[in-house]
Amino acid sequence: MSRRKSLVSAWMTSRPITITPSAPVVEAYRLMREFGVRRLPVVDEEGTLIGIVTLSDVQRLIPIAGQEQDVESALLLRATKVEEIMTWDPIAVRPDVTVQEAAELMLDFQVSGLPVIEGGQVVGIITESDIFRLVVEEWRQEEDE
Image 1 (cartoon, rainbow, N blue to C red):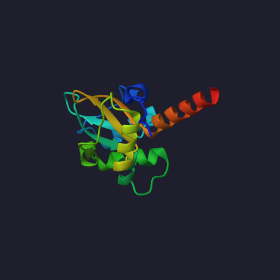
Image 2: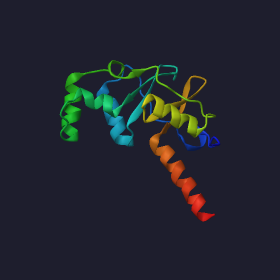
Image 3: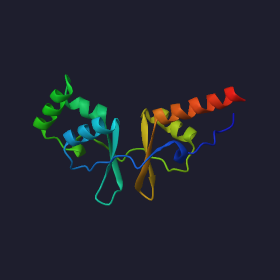
Image 4: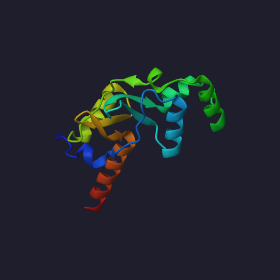
């Protein structure tokens, strides 16, 4: 079986929303809601990737989440910082890695998205949804042939 040639750079979301480790978790939650994302790369002052925080990480702070306002209020009361709940030193890929290699890493490490870094800086993020888009596009091309 041949390796797929599509590169992460062609399918990733460029310039993803990031957050700092000292930011309150409620800010991470608001960003996720506002931009419709489920994960945020965590960067230091120089923009270097140091972690990732996911919606699941945030939701674990609130055992029973009701309405959006209830979640936000509960998070405000907790005053937890992103660094307290994030995953440090996450698995990441370079933009020149194949999507197949990225997908294999996601399966191996049971994660649904990977930050994309170049020179330590976050340049994108590739998620399961991006890989689904690739699969659908390839299937469409096969149907058209």
